[in-house]
Image (cartoon, rainbow, N blue to C red; front, side, top):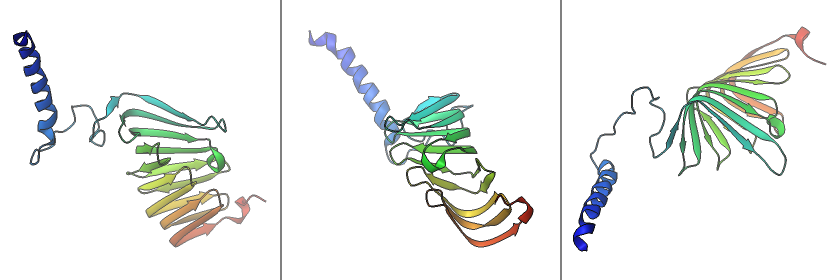
Amino acid sequence: MNARLLPWAVFAGLVLAMAVFPALPGKVPVDPAAGTPHALAARPAILLAAVDVREFHDDSGEWNRLIAEQASYEYARRTVTGTRVLIHLMGKALRGTTVQAPSASWDFDRAALSFPEGARLAREGGWTADVSPATLDIAGQVLRVPGPATLSGPGITASGKDLVWKWGEGKITMDSPKGRFHPAEVSR
């Protein structure tokens, strides 16, 4: 009877060794397979092709949406990471905001988006922002850009660094801003 279990025990040992071997110190990480973005899946993840992720809020009926050409879902961190990303934000003060980015990561637990290669944001009412690497706190309704950014709206264009855009409070701060006012374009 024990002799029949021996092949299964050897197989289980082989699978365990294959799982533990890459995690041993001194091992060089293997590049992703050809055709997958290098920014995706450094941890255990589900690799996906084109994705359309929607986050629904039962209490308010609001939703947010991420569309990406390639993506991965890290189930341990509850994070979606994608390339060539388009995001539609429809909750609270962010309603009507669209974000386009070469890559983005959406942490569902923290309700935060990060754009490691920068992004372009557009809002209803004619507001746009071109930003370097940035994070967007969906719950706090705050965009933080530690590097350079350009913000445009009806009648104003400003460029600078360290942009903090607090949608919920209606406040925008920026270090070293340089801007132009276009009085004829200001909505009254």
